[in-house]
Amino acid sequence: MSATSRRTEQSVLEQSGIEQSGIEQSNIAQPGLLHHGGCLRQAAAHYGIPLAQWLDISTGINPNGWPVPAIPSSAWARLPEANDSLEPAACAYYDVKHILPVAGSQAAIQALPRLRPPSRVNVLHPGYAEHAHAWQQAGHTVLPVSIEHLDSTASRADILVLIHPNNPTAVRFSMAQLHHWHTQLISRGGWLVVDEAFIDDTPEHSLTPYSARPGLIVLRSLGKFFGLAGARVGFVCAQPELLARLQTLLGPWSINTPARWIASMALADREWQQRTRQRLISNGERLYTMLTQHGLKPNAGCSLFQWVPTPQAVQLHQRLAATGILTRLFTEPTGLRFGLPNNEANWQRLDTALRQLTISNLGSTNI
Image 1: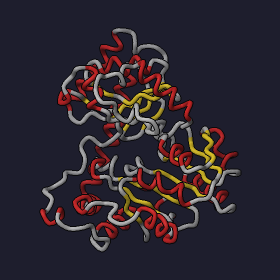
Image 2: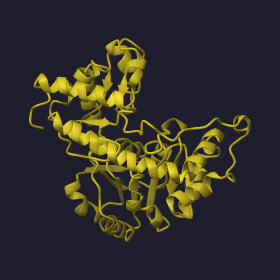
Image 3: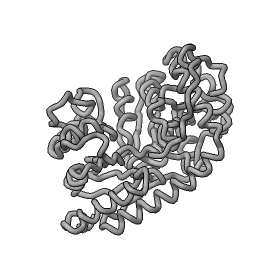
Image 4: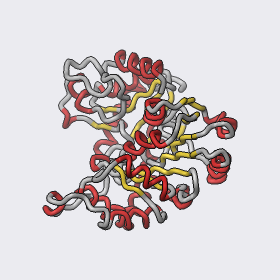
């Protein structure tokens, strides 16, 4: 995201009443940091609604994540060790031979640009803005590229960064297309970096089984599908040589011992994973249907969120927030991302709020 883009997003956020809350400013207002979903405490303070009364559907995180059992007390007393069960469990789950656990995929997003000399980097836009930001901060030339121009860009770029499925637009690419772009890039010593944070419901579309190939780097996370965002556990799948360089850069103990213990068990719980895939796919379809019925037909979506581009995004965001429902506001392009409610009562609460918007004619405009 360019400096102009960040200023534009900041301006819209100010207009929507998110920033001026009379409390200590969050990452929205801090220079050099980007806005993300989940700023619930700030919204609660601004709208005067107690924290416990909010329905936060702004993050795209599974609201009913893997059930974490009691953590053994010994996990808090020991430094993290690489020869525990985490790497084997992750290799089995992602179908790879080589993997590097990191403190959430965000750690890799920030570190990877430091492993390359100044390069021409094309990043899919719109998309998760931290990718472009990290490459810019490391001194690379970053050019946003729309989906329509990916073919022509892949033939010229040194690095191509994709989110698959994309966030927030949920665009997906065929396996053949991804392999074609990778072949083009590697012929020039380039990289294809693919962030697969939202792909766990369709593992057959993942590039991780091919990540030992030169120039292919795949990022995975336990934050979305597993609903373990607070544990800060992610993985990088790539050639062993690149993983070794990245590990040296990140240093020791990147994931704490309790988080390693939790992640190992979650990755090995195949029964829960299968049930959750089925449930999330069903819930994603339910959310699509609900939004469509209220005049907010999503442009695209996946099992964890639906994307609604609309010029009325700011007003919709404000109106829903006034009822204690937090959505994710985007400004380039202007739209809202809706995540999943966590229980039946909150599904009904969202339905009622959307119905009120429709009655007021705000949600019945063509979008």
